[in-house]
Length: 380
Image: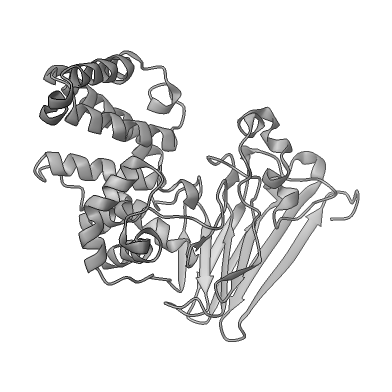
């Protein structure tokens, strides 16, 4: 502020006025905004993204300390709705493309609270929060490829500073190495920090020294299972992208940024896509209204899902996987689920068992379908 006053003593007062009138006071006044969580609607990444920047704004600006404290308190109350809605396995049902804004930003939120409290607020024993950080490396395939269920791209640019925030908070060597990998491979080209958002730029500039000092690595686990999202990933060999990589999901069709994709799967070979999920499209007004379910890349017809009696899956929480089971072994992974409840009654299906068998010995994926129709209406 002192340096800006040397240029023009009207800049700082005007900034404080705009921040107060456009951000702080409206934030305190409004409780009806859906993303806050106070109305009962399940929050998504909007909640923590907005709350994080309100928290930082209150900590850094203005002279009304009482108001600033109210903003801090309200941001914490609102963020608790985000945490409560997040699954215990830490999985981001919005997909890995949204992790930077969702779970990744939550990590920055609690890190900031810990920093400003002199570590009196300590989150390092909170397993669910740790899982929120670990999720991002569990769905990593190779290079910039990620398991792109929901509104996600196959290629994701992970924010290294956000990964490192989790790695430091939980002293997790896998997350520290993962953060360093993406920073050194993607973000520090030409010996300068590259980012397309100024806040992301500063976070990574601030973390650059530790990200460069850390030995980079990608964990690449042999398998991972997210029981709440019902997502399984398996690869040929732990620590390597060589050979087959497979991921499949159960879940339901009312997830955040949902695609009608119960039973969907992807397959990669040597880190490159073979059987794909089309992923997210270009957002339009129809992406977020009742016409969403008419968009081709969101429909089950354009995922690796059965078409039952000519009928596609339906959107809604009641359209879900049942009888979900996994068996993990050193050589063999099995994932089975009943897809019948993901389809509306007109599909006339009483059971559709899909079984995945990932065999490391034969380097193969076998998919078996076993179904029972109440009536045959057409090709499935």
